[in-house]
Image (cartoon, rainbow, N blue to C red; front, side, top):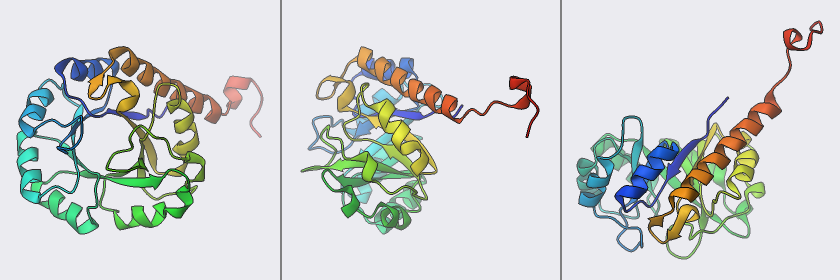
Length: 238
């Protein structure tokens, strides 16, 4: 069974990092954008990241940041993946990746009302050096603002690994995975406000509910894709 990878983003407290790890998150995100209510300084992100066990990846989210500050933040958090969420060009992202020798994700800001106006295939092609394209809602400012775009209007096939974000909650993530899993090379999910009690403050119960909903989607996909063999049915193969 394919396991959907999970990132819990916007962490600011030790107990939230611990809750994400306990629930089975594959990655945790720290926001390096000072205008965000979930902002943490690189030094604070370093303290929180030291709580992570092996194979749980820290991710540093940047918005139109200077290269020198990106380098300093990555030095403070060894092993972090970068996530670019502003107006960064492919050249900007590649330059940062080359400088710090880290992989990066690139956020695609999908219009809320008319996703077909955004050429995701072309965007993914432009950022082919990215480890994945993160799909978020285009709202005022940067970040999805807890809004969900129309998943069904995305192109049926994108030659990239995809990360679904923007307005995900324990109630809708299963449906999001079922709709988008076939559209990219793989699908992961990224949640922030959907598992919070207030901005920047995570709710451990909601984190566990979110992870449970993701696993439910994985089980449903596995059941839908299962084709009984002759040995399991007792019938000869045709």
